[in-house]
Amino acid sequence: MTPGERELRLRWARGAAWAAVVGMSSWVVGVALIPWDAKLEAGDATLRATIASMPARLDVAAMLAVVGGVLLVAFFAALTRLVPEGEPGWGLVRVALAGCVMTQTMVAIGACFALAGFHAAAAAESPSIVAFAWRGLWLTFTASAIPTVLFTVTAVLGMAAAGLAVRWVAILGWLSASAHLVAVLTLAQSGPFAPDGLVGALTPVTTVVWIIAAAAGLRGGVRRQPLLGS
Image 1: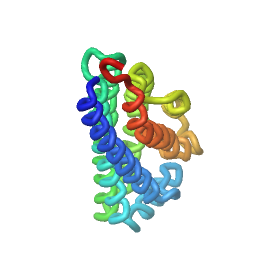
Image 2 (image 1 turned 135 degrees about the vertical axis):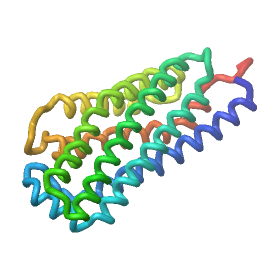
Image 3 (image 1 turned 60 degrees about the vertical axis):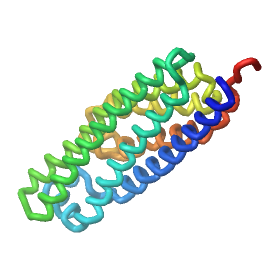
């Protein structure tokens, strides 16, 4: 890597960090806007009443989740610019990008279910329709755990091979992948392990922590990469 290439990679690392911080912040705010008492176990009628009482707030939550997903894809796209073809880890970070695109596509589909549920509740449609949309939202998020594990594992391995992440950041990635496996392997219909339960809502927070930690260390990782002739 030449000094000019290092400077270019540092700019990409800066952009990736901004995308990660803004994207993950958007996602956290979006999830925080979802009322904790909007649960399938409360019954269809109660769920509809809860959602109908705050359609605008939930609409913003869905949009923020999509914004977070788009910016996370941007983060992984920038990551591929830090590991050009032929360098250690280049294939793994590109697989991670593909996995991230899969995950965020499912997040967007889940947001569409959510929007359908919000509008159905606001229009006083049947409670069963609202409940179906709400279940679709959370089950889509649950299914997205599989490509999330894919992009987490491959990104951890790829960034380690490229020298872009220190060990404690990699550990956060492994913990996040493990948490997603636990969340997806449940058939509970109520309680914390239900699709819309506490575990399902908080598991993605492990991804948020790992992504922000990884993004914060990118510039340092680029600086640790050797220059030509050094």
